[in-house]
Image 1 (spheres, rainbow, N blue to C red):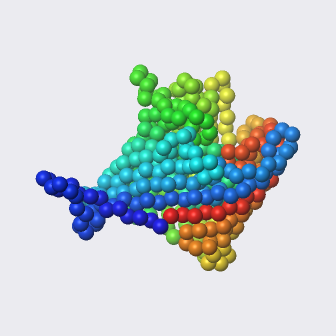
Image 2 (tube, rainbow, N blue to C red; image 1 turned 90 degrees about the vertical axis):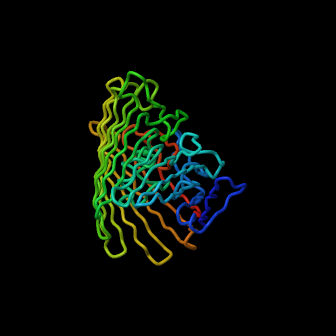
Length: 368
């Protein structure tokens, strides 16, 4: 259950503090979170073709987290706001997002009723936001994040962000002075701290978004470019190396059924003239079968140009809501790796090079 904590107001010259009804209206803090885990089975988890049963660390139907968010009414339609959100692995209790304390979000900013909000700190960027309403599987253990691990982890350290909504139109942008300070491994940690004197491009990142949506349909496009520096992962070992993604996403409602689709065009200019160009297409639907039962399904295709390493993913998920806060779910997925591709169907998992993989997961999710 969400808890609201009234801030104590220290009175000048007083020995204690008081919390008044007026203070509660002006300032509040909310504690929230998700605990989501289960058991997963995958085939061809290594070069020998062996299968594995395990409890996953990165995600189930949603990544586990605990967060704190708050706001203060400054008057005139202006609010101060902050978000501190920590990701964790429920199987071990360890921290997520490259072992950060508040790896999902850590930001403070100002929000206006008229011009939108400005945020400073570690935050989700426009690539992440652009797909929220169109990717029906989201950060599920079997989803397009298994093909491109950056997509569900599209966050930027040391960044200034803006997001505004104007009569169903949305515009936003982020600029990072050093996009990723962690080097502990995984898609959320690529070791590019930046903020280097004399190099205005080292580990910088720019993302931008424009979109329109209403209750019936929506379309969103985003732009994202990451610059490298010495020691950065993914071959981006120079500030002249870049990793660029452009997305186009849309959804339409047919009754209570949502159909979402999109494409992610990616172009990498990495060290050693390793230049790649790929398109990731996805199409999915979310169908409420009853008030408690929801079926989600998606197909995705990665087309790596001038390469046999294409990937195809098919996934379905059935969720039964025991209450507004607790759900049981089962996911079934199949991923085909072309050429020497070795992309695992489960986020954070393993697969033998060029091997196809079947995955099944059942779990429980509780939100608070």
